[in-house]
Length: 328
Image (cartoon, rainbow, N blue to C red):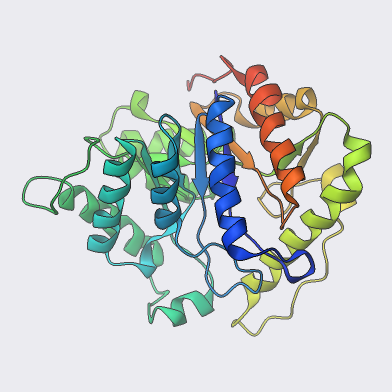
């Protein structure tokens, strides 16, 4: 199982950094992760977050492509209904060319009303919109499509669908599933078979909500305050524009002790050995190729981010090397 790092470039007011420095440092961390043996770096997309969440993951991936030579570069995720398929196709080609064929395009549906309003897009049938966008991307990257063509033939596309229904949709499309949850392998495999695709072609990867440290007790006061910001920010922005009340602040202590299923309801925390065991348990029985962890959680300081990258790459990754599970 390969291990990568994940960036959203949040810049909360209470820990504000110069934005140019934050973006430049993130590129330095991509270089450092590559030097330390990471398999991949992933970038996410959101709009109108009050902490400056990254809005253009393909642009960031292009910058990282120019600074690295081996590491794969992914979007986790690009919100497909907010972009025209031709725009996604052409921007993806640029990243794939700049990187020499290292792009992993993760796409998803989005869920925030303000983002769809900003782009004057419709949330109606957004899953169908995303499915259709991926089908169109395959056409646009083929004969008679956009020019120039991508280096990779085909470009890996990862469906950022969560839950059994989403996993089945990814399978029906014959695309990769951007989830590390082993429980989704069965509905994903069923979708592959139903769609006429070899079940053996199924591949999974996904972000791990967690943090590894050599000294969990020492680092928890720092990690917990940034984790609280990140989770509360997600929850606040999730309901924005819906009329629903802002959720109460997350009890991060309870979350780590008694986490449930779902990216906002669980968090792995502990030594590399502890987290490696939790990741093996999560991915058991599924063809999970890659997992990636947050390098920075909720606007961490540079020294903490650098330490996270080092621990992920030099301590966690070796524990998971050769640990990829075979799908049944």
